[in-house]
Length: 393
Image 1 (cartoon, rainbow, N blue to C red):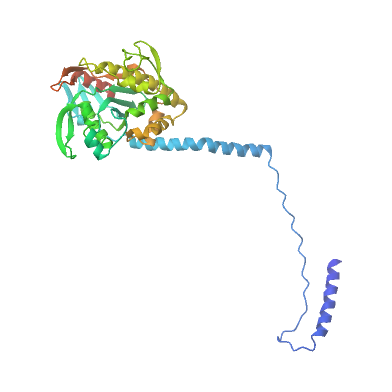
Image 2: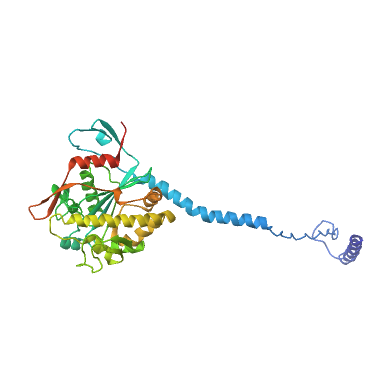
């Protein structure tokens, strides 16, 4: 009905317009055909959004939570894989052996006392160095005046990544070794018999010093590869100590001259500068005075490692946090990916004083009055086989 009415009105308008234009000359030859009626399109109905059901909402929440939870895990797994591929960088290079040992393929296989030993390629080693300087300083003028410092403390951590087992070798700083030496202009000056701690001094107080020490320690240990290193200066000790809430020890020796609370036999939780005092203090007489200090260092490291491993089980990023705290007072080639891989490898491991191995030495007084340590080569060689090798026959 409405459509018919519209057509009638349009026809009427067309008639009136036709009468009005009869007197005009059309510019176009086309005949005027009037207006056309357009069909009115029905209005589109607006879509009404359906409310999500509780089940759909719960599903979306679960997906979001999964992304939030799995994304960090994925990142850690990626870092783990990258760390594994970059951590193992060296091969054993055994240039010498004790009498009665047969070395094949540079030490990949060793025949000793009727048994064959294969080098364990799942082991990676890290050299930890404690440097007798308050901070890292490689300024040329500073080095000329004060030197790069010495490696007061040397520990090699051998980590079996297939089992998570950690073996720590306490390398005496005064072991006599053929060290690469350099003159004041940095020019190579040949190998000379020096205390092992001085290998660090022939360098820049940073990477070169660390690498020279790594090379010297590796030679002392019959050419086992040391893949990574980390040196820390004195200022870092208290920072690391306090980061794990302090370290509890039963005081070895009388250190009241340095700190009244460090009485022999006392049970003390070391905090702040006490940690540095405890691990560094020593008497200079007798000639073997450093042995007592090494004993305290082993005790301290065992306690510190126990607390750190416990924390790592709940937070694999803890080693990265610790490195961040001491980065200004440390030099290392341990990347974030390497540290992540190592953290996952040892997270479920335990560590005790029995996991620390000592190098038996004969101690002599050198011409300059300083102590000189000479290892029992047979015992050292057998220790290397026990830590780094697997008996295959």
